[in-house]
Structures are given as C-alpha cells and as structure tokens.
Length: 360
Image (cartoon, rainbow, N blue to C red; front, side, top):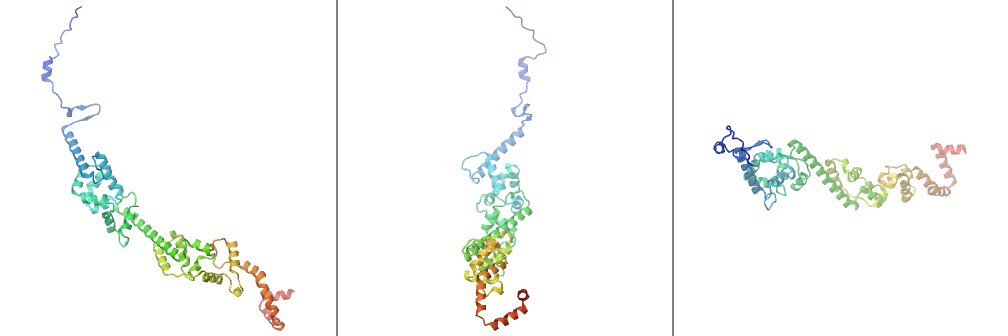
C-alpha cells in the first residue's frame, strides 16, 4: 500500500541552511534554567583561583594542624578555626592589637571568609600563628595577657592555668575579657592562699579541720592557740574561707605561720579558768564532769558551745554531790566561837542567809 508523503512546507529552511546559520553557545554561558544561575568565563576563573588558593592553604597548614596526609579544605579550615577561636582563649581585639597583620586572617576564620586572607597570613606570619595558636605552652598568649596586667605577681604557669579556664573569649571586647581575667586571678590567688592556710593548720594541729581537733580533744579549738586574739578568725578562715577576701586570708596565713600552739593540758586548764566562775575556782571541779554536762546541754561539738556558758545548774549539782560534804567537814572542824562570829558577819552581809535565820 502506498502512503503519500506530506507536502514540504515552503517556510521551513533546508537542513543544510540550518547547519550554516545556527550558532553554538559555549557550555559555560548556557543558562541552567532549573537552577536559575549563569556560568560565565569570569565565574570559572574565580572558581579556579579559589580552588587553587584552598589547595595552597591545605599545603601550608596541614602539618600545623596535625594532618599527615591530604585532607579536604574544610577539615583544615575547621582545625584552624578551632585553634584560633576556642583553644586560643584570647579575644580577637587583643590579638589584633598585638599583631595587626593578623586582622584579616582572624576575621576570615571567625566569619568563614576568604581563603586568600588565610593563605596570605600563613605565608607571611606562619611563625606568629604557630606560637599563638599551636604552642602547647601558650607562652606568647601569656606574654600578651601579662602586658595588660599591673601588680600581678603570678608565675607564667599560674597565668596559663587561669587563661585556660576563661571560656568563650574570642568574641569579647578587651575590657570584658580583662574583667573576667582579673576575677579568675582573684579566685586563683584566693584558692592558693586557702591551700597554704590549710596546710599550715595541718602542720600545727596534726588534723584536717578545727572541728576534728575539737571533737578529738573535747574542748573548743581556740584553746590550742592560747590567748591569741585572732584565733576565732583563723579557725573560721580554715573551715569557711569563702567568707573572707583573698587579702584577709593572706593576712591570716602570715599570723598562723608566726603562731605557736599550747599543749592539751594547758589548754584544758585555760578552758576551766574561763568557764568556771571565779567564786567557784577553789572548788575541785571535775573537768570530765563539766565536759559531760556541756555536751548534754550544748551538743557534742565543742566549737559550737558559747563562750563562758551558763553552768549554774552544773555548779548546783556539783555542790550537793561534791562541795557540800567538803564544806560541812570544814564547819565541824571550826571552834564554836569562831563559827558563831563568822555566821553573824555573813548574816549582816548576805540578805539571803540572814532571811534563812529569820524564817527559821
């Protein structure tokens, strides 16, 4: 069966004419309609330059960052950024003040900026970058910090310890950073004095705390220091150092170093002399009985007992059980005339005694 071909349109050009008149568009200028962007010769050149620059950054920094083999640019960039913005601990403003040439490098790492700025810094300032950001001793960073501090006598090792515990510093302005640094220095100095204070206390007492000494010896710890005026502050500083400023703790430490202690027997004697009223001093007060009374009334911890506690109840009990028989024996042994004269005198001087005779 024959099929008739459709007639050729007079408006359509011949295929050969189309080949000679059609212009082929280079691939880099074709519009990618699905993505909505346009490749141009300038774009390709920039991309090539950026890629080459990234390769140069990798080559310059990979060993500095601890990479032995080839790694992607992002890995090197992330390692540099971590070293500069986190491990470093100094603020960007302070680094720029010390090394203005690093300004573009620091900004590029902070804001994921130009690889070109990073490459230039690595080419021109690699020694400085290594000292600032990849030296475990951080000697250069400590030097920069030390130049900002006045009147601080801490060692470089101590300043490094302080620098390492100041968090989130890179984005701070210098003033805010120095406020944090001085606060940490004050805290560090105070902690150092506290440790020395406790060590000196341990050397003098042989125990860890004043509370432990008091429980072991059953008298308040201040009697260990005899009549030292600052005894209460010293003991409080050892157990509650947070209540004192660093300067006060340092002052108390020097006092403690120059202090001598007394023996337990002397301390017990001083405790009795302070606790028992003078009028009963001639009585043979039993220390063990007195301590038992105080523990029952005020608790087991002697450091919590009040100064010069009320022991009236104890004296009355002791009088009936121990002192009254001694007094009765003395009365029996006195001559009658002397005893009568003494009673007359006491009746005139002591209203309570006189009333006893009056009522009887």
